[in-house]
Length: 372
Ligand SMILES: [Fe+2]
Ligand SMILES: [Fe+2]
Image (tube, rainbow, N blue to C red; front, side, top):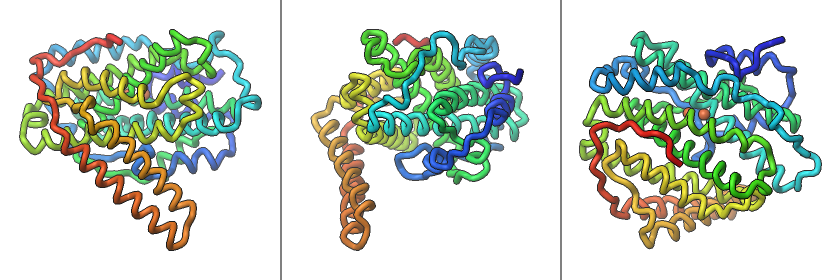
């Protein structure tokens, strides 16, 4: 029998295991994964030589501990269907929920795979043992995560063509420091998202309309470790988090990541309704956990209780609805409507950036354990 992606020890093996599965012609799913908008997951490339030159000596003790833990691979074999995987009645699922849930799975699969592609490339191009070891371990995890979501999609007769995505999706260039901020945040917010859903469904098991949520606890621990690795990488160079301009960049990335999550989640009302989760509550809960965690390395947190915070996020969300309506309408009037929406969203984003931050004294040792 062929290997399953969950048992793979490298990203390459996991991807090969997925590709060996019977082909599904699902251009629609891959087309969704190929989209590049402000709201869809992107693929990144960077200055790999510069990243390869990082010296982890200043954080050696914590680094070695983290790598040893990742090498011990507690989640090997976890990301595969077993007897806990309940039957999914795709045909009986309410159509709006089904559409939103499939969209959620495709976008999650793309986001997981985006990490895999970036990490795998760093491993391939690098020659620094510390760096290539870390990136190979993270690529392994992300390939398993993407493979598992694809397994769930296959039951609905859909799959994202991972090989095709690697070849054909557009890559966005980010300087290494932007990769650190963006990837660190996406790993930590990923942890907060997965664990918040998991805990919610633990308390309300009747709302668990799909078995994949049962896997979220171990899943979020992988993301937590990945975030820890980026926290250590940032710790090797204090300028990254302490210089005036970099503080502005950190604020920018925090705001962009939080606002994107808000808008994206509000696009899936039926999905959140089925889970029994209010997207506004969920957003704030995830922001709170993420803010608390990022105090390990960022010199500030956003003031998510500021009176302008939620109203402005809602305004950006309305603007986003207007952009979509304009694009659908087409013609000159549609273009105008979309343009107006874009201007509104841009102003909203600037307004969020003007909310004063809360300063944070960063601890000497950044290492945390998942506590939620
Ligand atoms: Fe992941
Ligand atoms: Fe991750």
